[in-house]
Length: 371
Image (tube, rainbow, N blue to C red):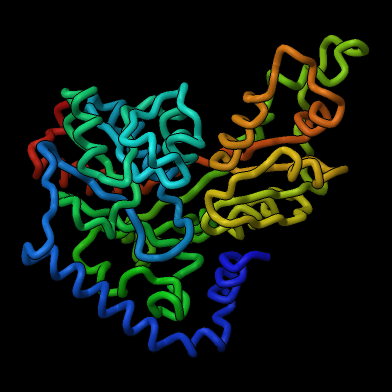
């Protein structure tokens, strides 16, 4: 177990030894407050994009469902004729190759796994760079007709001015001890939620049980709905035993079967819980967020099917596609390819999320209602 995984587990169980780090959290909080204040009064310069910017982020360390939310918003806006683009830091990519436009021909190792997943799923115009100004300039140079930019995970990037802030909160995980790093897993204090649009990532069962007068029913909420299991490498599946069966088909592992759940996302426990709720007997293999898997590493997980998230799938798939496909895969790689499955998820937003978005865009001169 590496340090990141160990600390994450300590946060989850609110280990007592974390309180020894409280003085460090106080210092971190002071520096965070001074930094934000410096941008607010103009001591540090910030960039104002020529078109409106919607920032989506969170105040906690670890995944909260931002990427599926962004894909849902992009699809919603595209269907209504809004020319939307996305920018990202491109975490996990090669910063020496940035700023860069993200296309379906990009490599996740170059642009980052989340940007590649967003573009491959939605086809949205997107650019990546740690310098968000350069990302926006690169994006607008290639797509000058854009009306709105969604900034992925830029909440604490105050060098970029924003018109709208959406903060995603994982309601199931909550805020732990409500302490700042490193005692707790808050990047910013709870007060940061006051002047932003807060989207609560809720369990589907909790939302369905809420009555119209409950606080939950009045929240802006999203749920992640698991889709059908898909073979991660369908084009490789027919290599398994075509000599004996020319009609080889990928058969998904049935409910009740034992599976390896491999996850390198910010909060892997959510993925494991989802698989368990679908009826699988889960052998959990958590990895750090944005982990760079190797095929040799995955070969260790034998005997049972391997299920991964969409975010991890784009990197693992790229590893296979980088193999010499002019040569038949050897037996080990073929067998591994046959056991790799991906569980896509779709973000379902409550109607008041879209109503709020529409009101915010109209206030910025983007009349989505007339599109």
